[in-house]
Amino acid sequence: MNQLSNALMKVGKWADKNEYLNAVKEAFQMFIPFTIIGAMGTLWTSVLCNANTGLGSIFPPIMALSFLNPAFNAVNFCTIGYIGLGITVLVGALLGSSKGHDPIYCGLLSLLCLAGVSQSSMDVAAADGTVIETIKGIFNSNLGSTGIFTGIIVAICSVELFNTIMKIDALRIKMPDKVPGSVAKSFSSLVPGFLVILIMGLISLVIYTVIGGYLNDFIYNLIQAPLLRLGSSLPGILVFVLIAVMLWSVGLHGENMINGVLNPILISLMVENTEAVEADGATMNIINFSFYRTFLCTGGTGMVLALTIAFLITGKREENRSIAKLSLVSNLFNIGEVCMFGYPVVLNPILIIPFIASSLASIIMGYVLTAIHICPIMYVNMPWTMPPFLLGFLASGGNIMGGVCQLIALAVSTLIYLPFVKLYEKQQAAAE
Image (cartoon, rainbow, N blue to C red):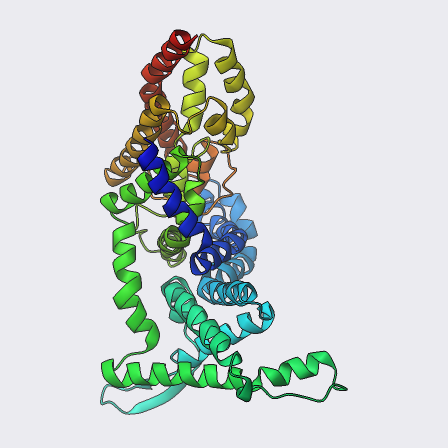
């Protein structure tokens, strides 16, 4: 146990100190409120005020509010539709700040580099190949879910290039002391900024010359698509879950350790579902960010609300029941630290077993229930503090079976915890 704990602690410390993973993790955490705002737009147009698939099909009077749908579509478009753009700016700003540069400048530089490597025109041709019109602009494929990984890579590369070039003193324009500081700072970064944008443009040109496609296509096919296939598979998500709960079992915040890798995958999958619903298409990805929250984090990571319920059902020792009563309210809002450090679960060989087993079982159950069409596919991002049942209900676009399936997973997790709670209390009695 000590060897495993030491190994996991080393991994956790490395992840915690990695500036790239931290920048990506914090960027997604900062953008999550906007994905929730965008989800509100989807709920309105797809669940409430929709005559075909929403409340409007069973309660026609609500369609009197359909004149508001374009506004809610705009809410979705400018948030979820531009997630790649937002993540690019945030990663650039956060990484630049960690290196001691102006975060606003680095965020803007990352945005300009993304624009510089993106497709900016498209020819509309007739059947005989004659060009009818040339459409100019940056297309949504570079700014939405399919552009997330491109944005991350462009932001990291542009800030790293800027940081390296800024160290070359000869390339920095020095202004007289009497010049205002803001002006002097702008001129100091003029040449480095120009070189960064130029270099990124040249890299994009080389890629286009070699493969005949744009940087976003190259990164999507080489990196993003394989990662999405991995993350959307049951074995893939089980590996991520196992890593998260094992880190938690030694006292490290599992999600914080792996979110730099996991969040870009799961949020991309969820945004793909949301975009499909907006386009009146079928949702595709069973596993996504909302699914992960619904079937792993009920009460907190490890389905620890089930542990609290198990102690309230079968626990005999007053100290354990007191902790259960204390943690119940926080568990209802998916805050599990009271359980993790109260009983505790951390470094507790007996409770770690069901903690891991219930996590894996809940994910498998959620996947199977969704695959056989009992549980609806999740596509709406909800605040992580949303109570059980409501989370599953709203994340599935107001489908009651989403909430019911979350409660089923909670019940099964409780059954897994029950015998280990009894065993743990026997151990406590023997220790006394």
